[in-house]
Length: 324
Image (cartoon, rainbow, N blue to C red):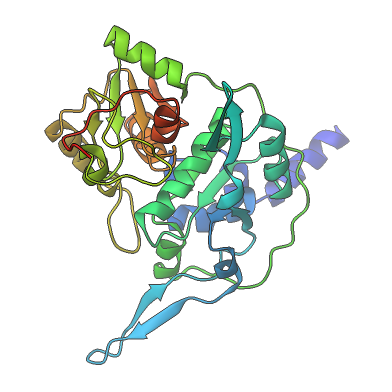
């Protein structure tokens, strides 16, 4: 009885938000939700520009109105743990070929997440700088990778740190103290992962929709990245440029479900069928995967991790409107 009374006493002293924090409202959360539940979640701040984590935001004053406009994101949410995006992906040998920018081994990703202070039972909120579309797809890539290795209690802060700052929430430029976590990667989730063989099978069976998330210039073949060895796209793929996933300016918020439906319908994308998303390296394609799978609810969507880099490295054919 004494133990029961003690437990009830502890529960009464525990903030309600801390008790309910694991019940995420969805794959996206807003600043007000995170502000109320910050003490009960772990915030993983993912960015390439790691120096900005301890810098201050930059503002520009409007000469006419005197109002300050946020022009550069700096600092972080108090308690956030920095994750260097350059370490999120790795180079691995696949079928005798060195493939870059793919998911690291289970052991290496486990070490990275433990070094960020992640524990097995944590509810994770991923925050990017939110200045650009590319920032938000850093968040979706980390989200996909955590889910691929078995962690499902995850959400992304819509608009990232830029939205947090614009909503006048508290930030800091101090270094975060990190206590090593105990997170263990689980079995790889093949339901959200596509290999080159999966793409080949999809082309043969014609039962899977391929979605190319790159800019139209890359899809059409007028331009390609240096690590992609042939111009154009995988034959039969539908182009859904990454610029349609979020708003173009800061804060780079995700397009609403209603507008996403309209855009995908216009471009001929079936939001309910089997799909594989790809880009140049599996970064941008995590955004379209996130939209289709997590936001729109199609649980039959896979991300081609190696994307066009691996596809062309393996000398698979591509379709282009140009001759170069």
